[in-house]
Length: 201
Image (cartoon, rainbow, N blue to C red; front, side, top):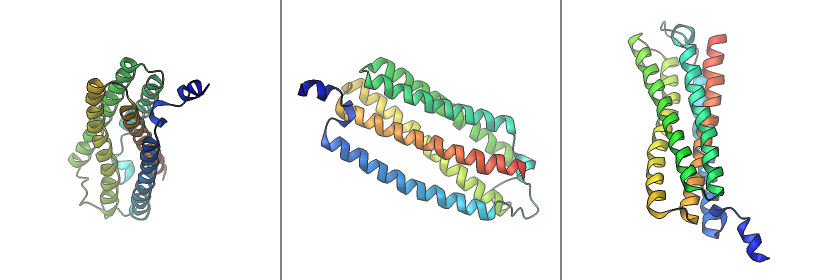
């Protein structure tokens, strides 16, 4: 009876140490929420101070923003599928979805770098105005987090291939999944309060 109960517990939660590590990561995400809330607040204050430079309507390219949004939200879906396969003890399926998540994340970063390059060519740099300074810091911080996530996931894949699916590797993958979903949530706020609000106002 106890064995059956044990098998219903997800692999990443089968040790007290894993549970504590996951709780610790939730606390870390709380600190990240404070960081991004601060950056959003700064943008909210400075987002209409153009200093004679371009406005949101002048530089935002709707098509590119929609592509970025699709790529990142799709990567959140594939990340969920990866964790689903992990729960089924299907490491091959898990890694396939993990890799697809990374490809979508890399596509997002490519589009963001292209977007920033376009802005710079239009004369919109972080030195141009308070709006652009706060914009580049907010999006750059998010992009840095995505880039770190891609490197982190590559290391996780190497560990999975070397050590297999264990409570430790499962915990690391689960924590990464939390991190990746957090970045997607932050992007939804960026899309709504930076891009959509900027194009409407």
